[in-house]
Length: 96
Image (cartoon, rainbow, N blue to C red; front, side, top):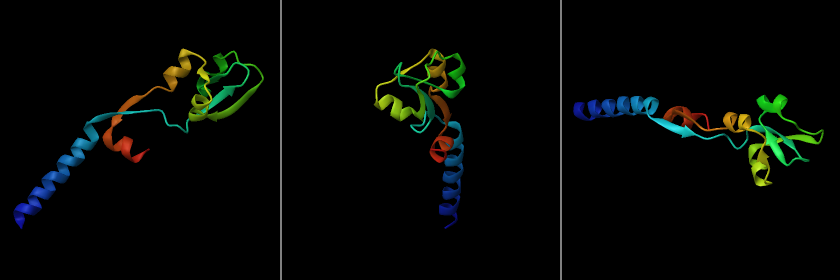
């Protein structure tokens, strides 16, 4: 019984260490908010909006909506801010 308990504790500790050290690629959430320009058929990340040369025909939506209707990223600023990043396994699992 002691061997099983020790084995379970070792497995659990290894799982915890593994979960916080193994990096996974975390993609941009499909619900990430963007600004859509319906005239230019483009979208911009909120932090890049001041740099965008958008018309007055703007709206707010999600990145999923922008990609589904075929809008293009307005600039490299938007692409950089909506890019993927590496995060620990547990962070990706429990913040999705």
